[in-house]
Image (cartoon, rainbow, N blue to C red; front, top):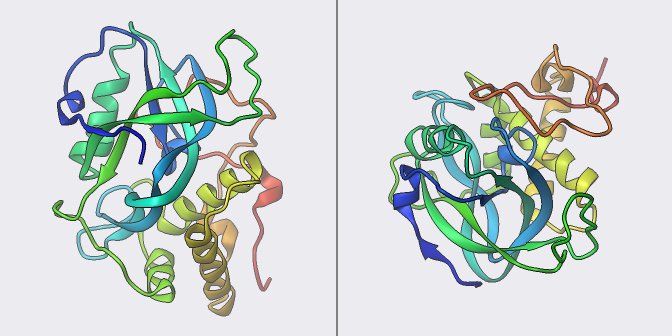
Length: 248
């Protein structure tokens, strides 16, 4: 794995210089904070798994949902999106501390982020192949919300059944799969896409409308998304063409 260091102090410390944050879950499509730049890329030495429980945004205390975390995997590569946060942004880190550490049960680490090799910067002369230090949030088995491994059909059924204050657990999964397919089509993630297929199959079998799972009142995404997103809002956006109902 690339150089990773436990950096839990950064959950609360204010940053005095620009820094990168790497997202591999809902941050990819719903960061919720202001940023200067966003680029796709990957981190090495990890694989994405839906092994972390969630009792706030995508589940409840009695029916916890499942959200993504990373597990150490020597041969693993996890794709996602990194966000550059300016030095004068005093809101982003406290927001992430609340969202990821306090509510989510994640710890903060620093890891090497590798920008997508063919990426061309439109507003920077920095080499697209230059790796960067980035903050990374990972849930570990010691946290109270940890659910761990389970058969994929069981995980998919749990995801389909759960919802929280931010929406259904299925929305979290399906939007992440859409992001990966649309923005990083070359990325391989059998765990993610297998769960997507199973959730859609179970929804079809149960005659559940995917549009309902994804949220009925969603704004049309623009071809070029705004870089500034209102803080502490977990609203989701997806093109209407991606929303469909099954068995109608």
